[in-house]
Image (tube, rainbow, N blue to C red; front, side):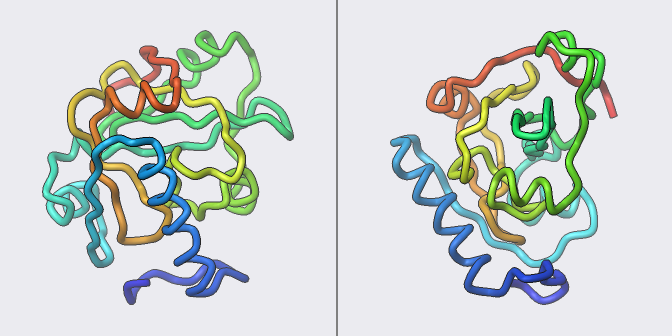
Length: 170
């Protein structure tokens, strides 16, 4: 793990390496083309994009959204946009949604915040992808400073993701 990133409590280098391996194995098993990029600590979206060799709009956040204590959905939104609670509630047909704390996100996916990817989650949660996510995108890859670049259409197809307008300009 690059210096500058604090280790999560109880999560040593071995656990982080296993998380990255799980993410890479899952994207490999999907059969889609991907590229892994490694970079050091970043302080902004622009810096992350430059480190990954992509535009800021191509960095896609994977957010864990809780519908109930034991039911989450993974939401993919471009880094330069924010997801809209009202739009997401309408798409999911529910009036109550929340985001778990860091421990809850880790428990739901097996990934630390900042590393979450829809590939290789310890539980295969449903995925909702914002309609603006198209073309080449860069997702987390299970460890800090590690990203995977993939085609958005491939992600939607292999994860059987729902595509909907769920974001607003940042």
